[in-house]
Length: 438
Ligand SMILES: Nc1ccn([C@@H]2O[C@H](COP(=O)(O)OP(=O)(O)OP(=O)(O)O)[C@@H](O)[C@H]2O)c(=O)n1
Ligand SMILES: O=P(O)(O)OC[C@@H](O)[C@@H](O)[C@@H](O)CO
Image (cartoon, rainbow, N blue to C red; front, side, top):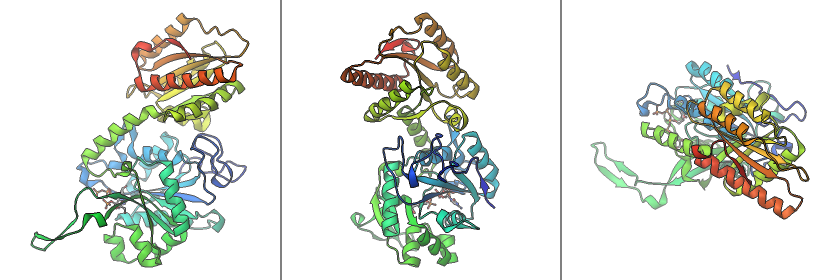
């Protein structure tokens, strides 16, 4: 039995899944927006095993459902994949008793392209259920993934570049896996608990996730493996080699690929999540051409500052998910009126998240070339920011005058990106309500 999340549908035109931020991915998984221009020309789906109980944390709540800033760990992992527009679908595998909880998380955080299938008594059984779900029933061959990425749901810090390396290598080699240097030496023990021998550490690596496989390889591996594999195995790469003769390409991954296993890992994950909160923002254009043009320039400038901007025209429909997932917003207005940013503040209040962590809102007033660069009454903006501050929202103002001189305009945009990045990183109460000039 599988349960489909909301809108597990295509964009209605091209048959491609829509990007979770409300605009379609390019052809055949080509990305056409802020994913660094990465794309693949084959179909990729993901299986996230999340059916465990997390015994080693010592907590009653399975670690994948432990929350940080009001959001379960698994939601952060799913979003890491949602940001990758060339991934067509995500299958989350959870214990039967957690299916409703998982569906609630998908609905609440408006995750797209996600479906939920029941797990098994072991990790391999859960992964197998996820893999089989990708091709079961009447799924036409043309809709089946060509590559399946398997990634533990409790490894939330995975980036698109590495996913791209794994998926590409899996397509070429049949299988690919992430590895990391060993931190401790591996030793073999005798049955009496003494040292038997130690392994030469330089010859070994830790097998991590994500891993990638062609769909045929991983499906065949699970069709052929034994009950003992299902019960005691921990390595999908081994199954591919043992049962398909497919030797995985091993790719050293970044240190961020670690798995949340013990209670201390949850504290580390929370700290990293908080630290990365200031590296993304949702930029709302309001749909006007000058604002959309500014958004593109700001996104490029912000990228150089290691900040990722997701650009949307508004927060209607699927984009409403930002109110639950994003902590930083940039509202661009070509009018001096504060109505658009007032609407954003009202939506944030309705989402009621500020008690956990103060969201940052930067109102950018873009005055057009040839117009007066006068902004709103400073006192009106100050009053609005003061009211927002009472609701734990940090509102800053930034005025940007569109210059006809291309070089001068480019410098202004870069300065605006630098100021926005500094405001988001700093979250300074002292600058709340100020109308800064880029
Ligand atoms: N029957 C299982 C067991 C594990 N997993 C998933 O496999 C991933 C890695 O496994 P692990 O870290 O061992 O998770 P747990 O089995 O939950 O941890 P523990 O061994 O401490 O109980 C986790 O996302 C876990 O939810 C799964 O889908 N189905
Ligand atoms: O064994 P556990 O279930 O704790 O964790 C799973 C890990 O073994 C697995 O994620 C990697 O080693 C790669 O296979």
